[in-house]
Image (tube, rainbow, N blue to C red; front, side):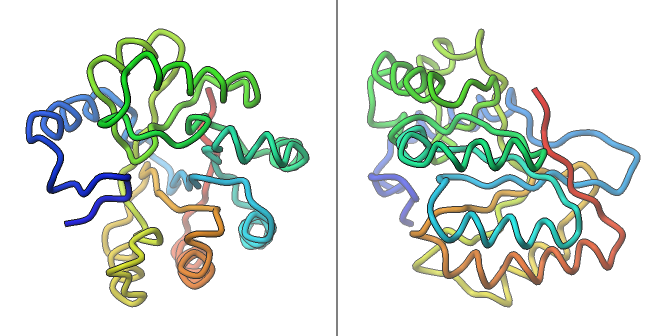
Length: 215
């Protein structure tokens, strides 16, 4: 089974995977609410083209979302950060260079996150690949609010992406308070462009709103 990181998940020591699962229980995985609300989130951008598309789709329904930005992409495209803020969306830190915590010393990983924070200025943090170790968690926990997800849209599963299966999974599993993972980067652009409009339409038709996660 391949991961989204730079190491196949099957080659990752079991203890690291178990520890990561335990750490995930300490992260925000959903947001309790009595209203029909979900929290759409987007990882890995901002990048040209796909951000404009995502914002246009969200604007159709006046939906707000949270964008977990890579620091290197944000540094190249600072105008995108201002665009997101002006439209009322939230910005989160997704490290500067998308390091894999399983393969990176904790001090190096923390420094990479801080480099991103100098650009993004946000307490919201999502680990790249959803992976943290005890060391990285300890180094970052006092400064950041860790945001995980309830549902993964599947738009980053390039090798096994099945559009109908991904859409069906979202429709059948979505519940109020869920945090939904999408992407807004060129690598996963094709899948995001197919999946997002249909899912947003389904959310709207079923009475759901999307709000940004606030610090």
